[in-house]
Amino acid sequence: MIYFLQTLKYRNEFLFYFGLICFVLAVVFLILTRFTTTQVYNVNAWYKPFKFAASTVLYAWAMAWFIGYLPDFDARIFNWVIVITLGFEIIYIAWQASRGSSSHFNVSTSFYSFMYSMMALAATIATLATAYIGILFLKNDFPDLPLHYVWSIRLGIFIFVVFAFEGFVMGSRMSHTIGGPDGGAGIPILNWSKKFGDPRIAHFIGMHALQVLPVLSYYLLRNTQLTIFVSLLYLALAVFTLVQALKGKSLFS
Image (cartoon, rainbow, N blue to C red; front, side, top):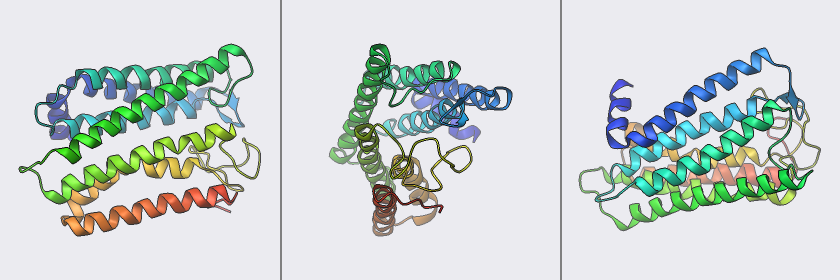
């Protein structure tokens, strides 16, 4: 772990520290869940900023690691795009949590509607920036890296982008529950619905292909064909959970 952090800092110090700040925030938000009773959708309000901060740590550090492989790539613009867009989302989500108010799907006032639109714009910009990195991985050769590992990065980014945009399924419905109201019984922390369809499951699985597939390929699969096959299975799993959600069916009922 120490080697990973040292190498990560060397490759992209900017995103390393951004991820570290998000890690500290995630810990603070998690602690706040034990000391506050404020709720949003019948769960502690601080779980949502905790999840977003923790997810941002994994994203920022994964992308910092990957772009270190790109030849002659100036990461400064990408770094600032990610810090501004994702940093804005975490700050707004945490601010709303502190007030006991929802951040997503909240259009109850003109200000909240504007902020929700800005969150959607920020997520879109961050996703497009990630897609650009994916294109660079397709255009470039990496003779010093195992081919199966390169393909795991390419496919991980592709699946991430697809299921990041899948978030608009929820945005278009102004709800993260299909077949029932938001705020029903859910599993601990993640709060995925136990009774109804929940597109957040596919969103989570798909976006974390960015970390899961490269780790599996590098340490376990060690074969290009097997990496592609497992990546397709992973994609199928994400699609399956999305289809189940769209049908209004819970995976936990």
